Each structure stands twice: as structure tokens, then as C-alpha cells.
Image 1 (cartoon, one colour):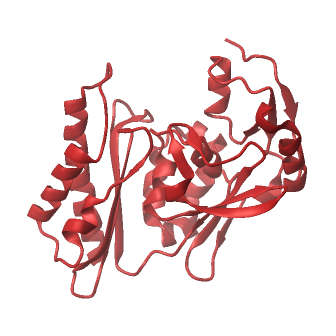
Image 2: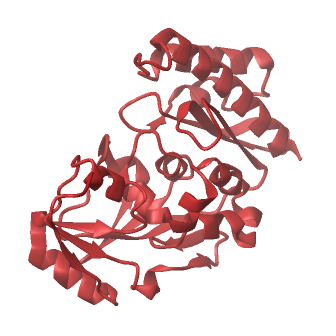
Length: 291
């Protein structure tokens, strides 16, 4: 199929892009990598009257280390650039571990880091990463900028707090605490395919190997990526045991996801996947935090 007719604009600066978005209002749509938007348009699932293509806005392509040990990533930075970045591997190994699981190399070469977060696909990795690592999302409009916590950014499947005249400009990750380990686990039907269920974890230990912080984010098992609540309730202040991790995994699988049933798996099957993936992810994150 072919998309419905639309107007096309290719600004070369952030200021020009914001001018165009303000002018277009609800009829405009930002085009970043286009790896999700263009197929949706081809199937007439999305019918924007106009596209504002950011691919010529060079000031949105960057990975900048922050002085406190974090990272700031421009919204148009290619997913493959993040995947291959040495500073990402050094400061946020869990991001580097996650990136190769995003579709196929050709998709990652074109897809953008901020575009995937703004798209808010409940089966996508990068919204989950933003939640897991407490990202701050810098949003620009002609009225200025605002910074939104990742936990407040996602409203539902493919829905965020972004207004029509706004665009996500930067993703800011605060530094990871010392003795923090992370782990990414997913099950998919084939390499490069969407996950049937996935879990990403980070665990921070003190010098006595007691848990200071534990976070688990699920995706592909609800209407948005899900930041779970159980890990710190059970693990904080404790030396981790297999029994404690099993308690967390069982609770999350039963109470903190809503996977549904489709042609690829039943709800019961997906809850079992969540149980197994959370257990494996948390266990590996703990071992990595000890190194």
C-alpha cells in the first residue's frame, strides 16, 4: 500500500523545525528515523497531513558525556551509533547490551534513539531503558524547554505527554551508582523480532553486598513499558538470596503485568516467561554488581 497524501518539510535547524511544528499544530508529525512511522503510514494506520523531517537538523545528532558521569544523547542519534559507542559501553553497559536486540542492523542504522522513545511502542526496548535508568527527557517548543521524567512521559500505547508543537530533543541519563549491575533478557520468536516478553534489571549493592536499589522494567506485556514496584520492597537492605529473587519474580509475573493472549502465546505462557526472565535478569544483575 501507499500512504495517504501528505506535505513534507525538511528543516535544517531546531528553530526552523519548531516554527513548522507550531504552524502545523495537530496536522503535523515529526519524522525521525521513520522505521515505525513510515510502515504505519503505508498501511494507513497513521495519516498525518504533514511530516517535519529532522534528518537535516545536525544539532540533534550527538552522544555527550556529562561531567557527573552520565550521558546526554541527541534525539536524532542513530540507534547503531549508540550501540557502537565506547562511552555508552563504559558508562551504561546495560544500554550497550540491549541495543543489538532492537530489530535488525539495517533498522538500527536508520532508527533514532529519541524517535523510538517518542514513538512509545509498548513492545520497544528504548522506552523501557528510559524508565529503568531514570532518564530525563528534554522537550522543546517555541515557548521554551521543559524536562520530563521518563516515569511521567508515557501515557499509554503510542501516547506520550508531547504536545503537537513540541519535540523530544535530548535524552539525559544520570550516572549509574558504583557497584551497579544490569541485565537484559527477552524471548522472541525469531532473531530481530518483537519480544514476546522482556525484562531489564539494575541492582546496586553496598560494600557489604546488601541491596541499595533494585529496578526491573518489563515490556511487551502491557500497554506501556512497566516499572515494577516489588524488587525494592523485598530486596532493599538485604543480601540477595535465590529465594528472595524467586519471590520477586513470581509476584511480578502474577501482579505487575498484563500480557494478554494472541496467536503467538497465551496469557499464562507469557506470565511464565515474565517469571523466568525476571529471575534470570535479577540474578545476573546481582552477580555483575559484585564484580
